[in-house]
Amino acid sequence: MTLPTVLVVAVALIDADGRVLIAQRPEGKQLAGLWEFPGGKVDPGERPEAALIRELKEELDIDVNEACLAPFVFASHAYDSFHLLMPLYLCRRWSGVVQNREHAALKWVRPNQLSDFPMPPADEPLVAWLRDLL
Ligand code: 523
Image (cartoon, rainbow, N blue to C red; front, side, top):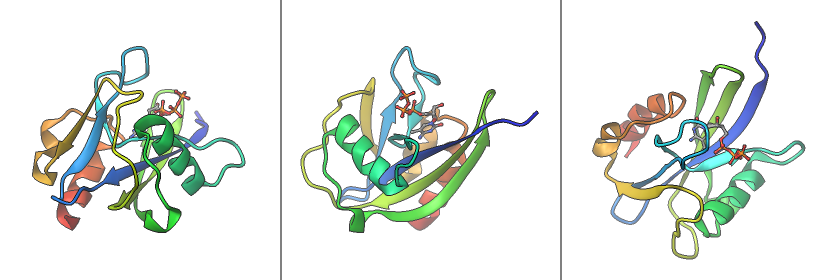
């Protein structure tokens, strides 16, 4: 069976103490309760970086300059009805204070604690990459 490919962008926001932000998916959404790297779908015709900047404003109320987004690694995972392709960007600088606008909860965690949180299957393999980097 051929599954449609859906492009989703995500970010590892890293604070001054080297902690990473993870966000718990809310009730009513697919994969509710799991802890993800924040992000969302790229709209048709939208540049991925612009989509991530838009999602970070909507979800976390922060402003990110495109120059501060470093593409890091791609996740690729077949969910039941689509194939998800998801670049994870690294971001260490933003303006504004992170607010929870759409998730069940937000948490800043040390890289070696990331594996304590159940994540969507697409995000899981990214944790080892990130731990090795940070
Ligand atoms: N994932 C995922 N990991 C991850 C994100 C941000 C998203 O596996 N870090 C999956 C979950 C959904 C799909 O990608 O199956 C779309 O993510 P979603 O729902 O956060 O994107 P939105 O908010 O753009 O989607 P709509 O609520 O449908 O508009």
